[in-house]
Image 1: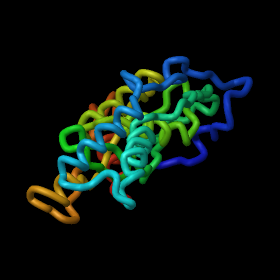
Image 2 (image 1 turned 45 degrees about the vertical axis):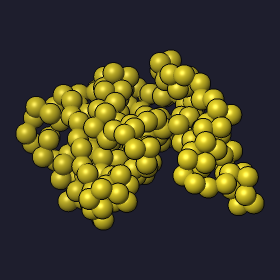
Image 3 (image 1 turned 180 degrees about the vertical axis):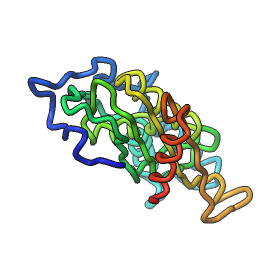
Length: 213
């Protein structure tokens, strides 16, 4: 069964909370050169046959640069965990977490929802941290398969639960706006660890709940 109360709400670490130091400072592998991005956008406009000095395009390079900085810079956050004092051993599932990322092949957005669940061990995690974890890895040049695995691997590594399950459902503009133009198509990916991978009953429960059953 799902639980919204099983995991402590994260208002910051308290006397029982423990902060994982591995997630406190988040930054791109290389700093984003915002001015350089703006210069590149200006060159792109010229290559596309547009005048970057026209009234309506004059500030487009800086706007586009600022948008990329926002999309590709994950905010810092602290992964706060708490002792599982109630020995809660049922599935904790956060459904329909919205996310947006950028396809690394076409630099076009893909967006959708993530379902993130785990079977608690000795620790539980503040519920909003599951959403923040998705956001952390989504703010990068990505492919959906990697994003799914990164969220699952991170939760497994930082929390050491008995099981982890992650499902992403997304629409890719590189499919809907170009190429095959498969409007309304969705891509689903999953990553499982522990009992949610090896125990058929736990696995079935997780997938049933991600489908809203």
